[in-house]
Image (cartoon, rainbow over all chains, first blue to last red; front, side, top):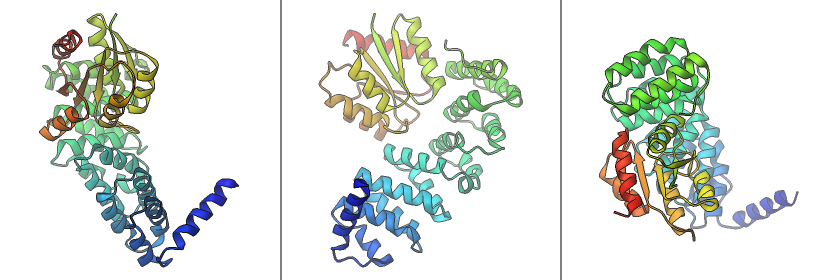
Length: 212
Length: 121
């Protein structure tokens, strides 16, 4: 109960400032110099129209970890098209931490992300395609294996295929075996692909990893 | 025997690096993200760290920055990533990396770099 009381006190401190407890007030609060104030605003703004856009704008310049976490939590709770589009843009960021936070957030939005994942898997940027494969891991969608098979059959980038093989080693079934075999031939001079395909085939055939 | 910590969230990549390094006679430990790697670095001595960039919880840059502030005997770190941009390489060196390799790594390439860094070259 002490924790709840402290939260109330913290929120009371925030309310003592000049901000109105409405959507305009929360937007203004997101620019406050105090990270604690911004964190509360990131949580409180969730019900406001256009909240995803406001949160994503803040995310671009936000450096405080606790505020970034609150923004990502709110974007996950909102989960609308704007939130997902903004998260996709984060995948293109130079900031590795932001990219990883976006990947983790997208993993928690299976429904919305499933609708755009095929597009992401065909993105011009191979890094975005790699991140899309990383996201597939958590989607629990019935087509995940099909999508991965399509990646290893058609993607020309070795690291995109390698990431797909890593995931097939975990979730692949006999359906993948033929495509894995073809990939081994397509990248016959890449030792990593040879190794990873062997692991995946062994895992699919025998049902477990064998630490080499 | 020299000890190496391989830090990567992809199990197959860890197994691949481990198999190359073991065949060169090194003892290899694994960590699945930067947080776990920091714990292992605090609890055991390593002669080399092989670090992926994109990992959940704490990425490779974050790990290196944190590692370099620890009051433990420091060891060289090889950043290994799918990112081949100069920006990523510069950032890796700024964070404390000693070498940067682009995935997929060739076995002889990894073995040679590790050998050179362990010798202090």
